[in-house]
Length: 400
Length: 149
Image 1 (spheres, chains in turn blue, cyan):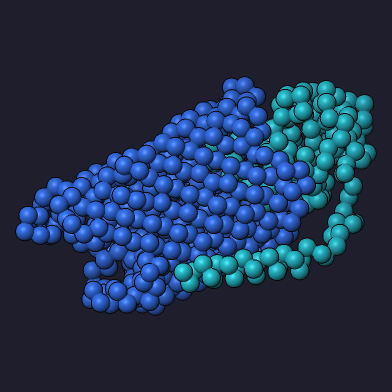
Image 2 (cartoon, helix red, strand yellow; image 1 turned 90 degrees about the vertical axis):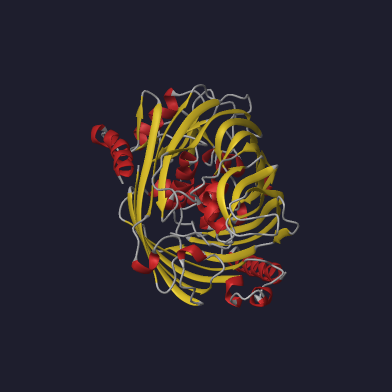
């Protein structure tokens, strides 16, 4: 809590001296945001202790950037968030990179960059840039948010004009990333019940995408992907996995294959925005000393619509379907293992109202009617799950 | 596998909606007129609709002589809204959101914006490679007026 208050103070101090809300200090542009949310769910805990209601749902960030020349720029953004057990308001470098744009069709970046995945992964930490509070979990799984958020390495990017047929935009990055041992990936790994997450080496990360913007028709198509190689996680077993694999034994969870691909379509007409995205993920891993290979193929898709009625009111809705394994959409294999069939899916109908009080302040209210428990964690729900449940979210954001 | 079928169906629905609304005619017939203004050293003598859209979305950052493009905008008002809707394909809130995304992902700085047309014209007149929009009544001595497509 003390760290959170200190970071908030650091973020707000410049405002006291600023004649306007976004400002420049000798050619250094400074922007920031603070979001505070509230989550309450009936029957299940999701992302935080939501059955009792939770304010552990906030983000803050501040960035500084400058143009060194007309084609070379540098910047850094500090970021902190809390979401139940995740984040705990630790301040991290969200992005910090140099960017040289040689031509419109070719630029190079080096440093810590935001990861691309689907239409909205780059902005998933910034509440003011979208209609909904929670992005559709079928594609933007909150527990994997830090994993996909940033990549440390180098990248190429550019915009290729096709004249009347619009623009092709691309990004290609290679590097590595970091996984917090208290983060969402660790929580998901430990949800298997037989291991404790110790540390992870993401190995080499390849991340990129290509989008075709066809503004004449207000439409854009995209395909984005994320792949890792040499990804190993140090774990400690909590149950015996065989005669020679006792509990407490250090082991390695080796990710033999991991990739995610998201296909996207967005259509904008006047104040209406429609989007459809589909996510395919493949994960094959093996644990040292354990002969069986673990393979899961999650799949998800959603359709969303948002409409701005006035300068201050926007409403949005989406229907999102997540399957923990595309080969077991009805949960029959889970039932055979003694679990509930509805742990195989999570079908989420969401409705959001966004109120823009002024250019700097906004308030959102959001309701979810959810069927299934695929993304719920057993350690956060020790008494089991309910199949049909409701989630309410509210958030206030200030940005400058 | 079911997901792919649903996904394909939803794309079809979106394309149908697009087809239905894309033929609704000129919605901007009664909007105020707008012209493009540029610094006198800008080499282009005219700009296509795509050029304009890409400049104001930060996708075209260099003129044909590889000198930087510096575009500027008004803070708000009818001219601003008309220009964005007609030539950039976004509403003012969508345009603001687009540039906030660029700012908070570190990809670009916000374009300079001005309260008045006079201040906007002065910026274009004083900065190499600058370009903006203005009402047709704008005085043409200090800047070059480019024909709109």
